[in-house]
Image (tube, rainbow, N blue to C red; front, side):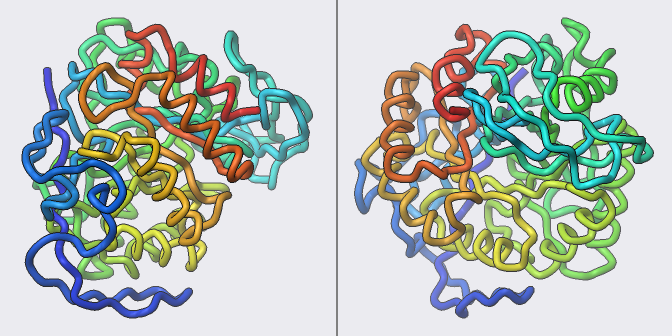
Length: 407
């Protein structure tokens, strides 16, 4: 079974207003290619067809690159994301952790020790009491090692058996009812394949991952050709209630990953801020993330506005599946731009580890992370697309890059 990664057409912005901490964002759109710096500005990127995931056009050709976890096919071996450490760094230290699936709604208890660099489950943390269905979500850990868990795989690893270095797991992906950009605002979710019992034990494994393993489980919404619009508060409210419904059906999760602003769909930033803040109010400690295209000015504007409003816990630009994106020289330069936009504590770097064009080898990824970490030791973390590929390769991302992020 395959799934085509999304292609986001990049509208050219003739002008857009200076961002404030308020809830609006203005943008005038025209035709042609994106006006922000693409890999063509500092890395080899030529216009044409993306050979990694079926998306046509490169960043400098004006088409939204398929460099997102929505791109590629299930058997393309495209790597995933790394996420936040649920117990501090690999070498220990104190961290504040709230209760997970069985935890309470308190701000969290202080626990010493680090998340294991590999091997069994982490026992750090723990909350008091019960906070209803699923419990209150824990705050974002000090370091993020995340991965995407696509639901199209026939026989995926069970969530509880994902390598222990992954402390954030994205459930990919809930999609809009009626197709893009959504008819009512509601979303739907399909279970993964049950070849190894992933579907049969799905809710139980999520609960175990959250409460015992101290991981964060985040529902990613959108994906391949599944942009969403929120032109009215009525549709935003319907989306909010739909997410809450899936929260109940799945027994609780820890956050929402905005993967809905893509193709020709300009993000309705003010409404997405409102939705995010409502979810954070409804579920204390709820996390909001987003995977922008690194070069895209629309994505940059959106993420900066979300951060300014206190509605985004981190942005995670995707440096893979597009010409020039996986080049260390481009990545390091572009990360510096994102640091100015959102800050180191709200920036997670997206890697794709695969033996194919426009992806990195694990040795290149490790080398790149070391350069980044030396320049900015407070970077929040890294992610890999996708977990299933990392498992098939023997967990190179989790066991080689993961410990470097967590230390």
